[in-house]
Image (cartoon, rainbow, N blue to C red; front, side):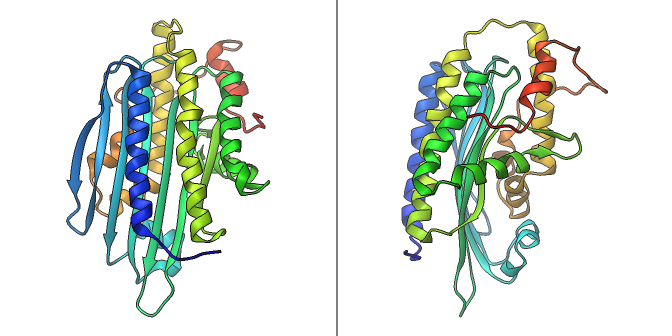
Length: 303
């Protein structure tokens, strides 16, 4: 079990992952291309943001790489891990969110990242994190099964319990406490992951990152031509509000990015281009909109 940290290998992988995912999503869209915007962080580090808008399939999407470092930890990190106080840090990752035009195509999010905190005379504290989750507006059992089967296949080489652990963590994490409802149908979420030693833990992160397009693009291909009208569009815009609420209130990555002086435009690229809120909305019983709440927004075994 090796614990020798190879930052260059992680960065090379993450930059390649950003390239690969962008190419596959551009192919799935068939019209739009990602526009790249590189940025530097005054305190140390930077990144490259890639955003797609007004595509044939995707209304807005972003695939970001960032690599930041500094001499003191953001408050969100030390609150989560008090032992990090007083250490310098290095963090890098790829994070993406895709918002489709068609309400029958789910929104998806994915993230893989590495974090290391160091102090003179002490062992470094490091871990990997990441995962992906799916947020449908009009759910489909077949899509949920495919999404979770792909996630499980990515986890299986690393232990019989890995998928179940990180599936549950995802259900618990992507949960809007103030609404008492999940954000979507889940997937995987893991953080503070170093239990397999550096080499094997890094291999696990790569397995998750490499499986995202296999999980998402087949769903996009199946649903992108489904007919929809103004009713479905308005429901999609309403449900997008939940995405905004979660990212601004609960999301660890958003809080870390803002508190560490990251680039605000890149951090908030996850927000949808159009969204609406409606006072005390409840779907009519026995409608497709009600089925989202009654069937899909419930933690369950999708396999």
